[in-house]
Image 1 (cartoon, rainbow, N blue to C red):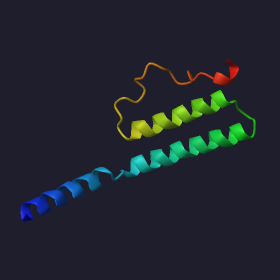
Image 2: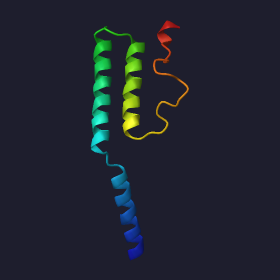
Image 3: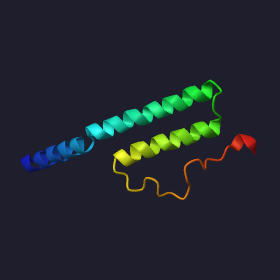
Image 4: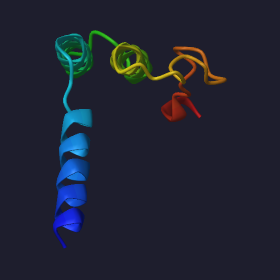
Length: 89
């Protein structure tokens, strides 16, 4: 029973540490959030189109993915800005 508790505690501690972000990740998340907020504000003000806002949000996602060490970041088949604006269809 004690071994089970020790293993469970170690697993919980490991998962807790794995969830912690580094200062660089936190900064990148804040930067990505700022980009997304700016895209929303510009779109709401009519300064950019929905498609342009989507491009900015894709860029924000890539900033965040890169900071997290996501090896898939930027390897999808769609380049930035390839979002289809369905409102024009």
